[in-house]
Length: 186
Ligand SMILES: [Zn+2]
Image 1 (cartoon, rainbow, N blue to C red):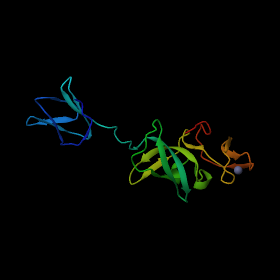
Image 2 (cartoon, rainbow, N blue to C red; image 1 turned 30 degrees about the vertical axis):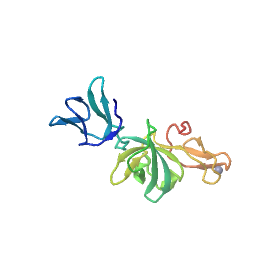
Image 3 (cartoon, rainbow, N blue to C red; image 1 turned 90 degrees about the vertical axis):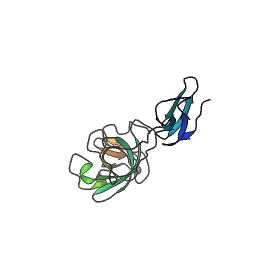
């Protein structure tokens, strides 16, 4: 018999006479208990009892690269919502509310956050802090805006030199661009 129920730390799951205590378990007075949350597996062929932990939660940490969408540009900071961590499509388990201080947007001096980013822009950023909320930077060449639409007509903006350009409005718009702007699809 193989059980597949969820167990919690301290749950009695088997007796030592019948099973060998393996990963995720501990023994006390001849009984086997779960030492972690997980799925109980009683292997009757090998007579092994183990508890298999589900995937650890996808918590963002310092140094992670994330994709985020810009919510607002304020005087000294940009607010954004982290969508995913680069390299994984799993949902982020920690808070996704992020801020980007004006001094962390570009290696150059930034006089106005709205000269670098606009609401709705998709950015690639690096996590530089997680408490009390997510703090991001886009200072490196590979970080910054990776996709953006025109604020007036919603046309996808194209790169023109160091700026973005709306082919419909024939208008140039400044941004802190990632070096591969326009090349990525999420
Ligand atoms: Zn336009």
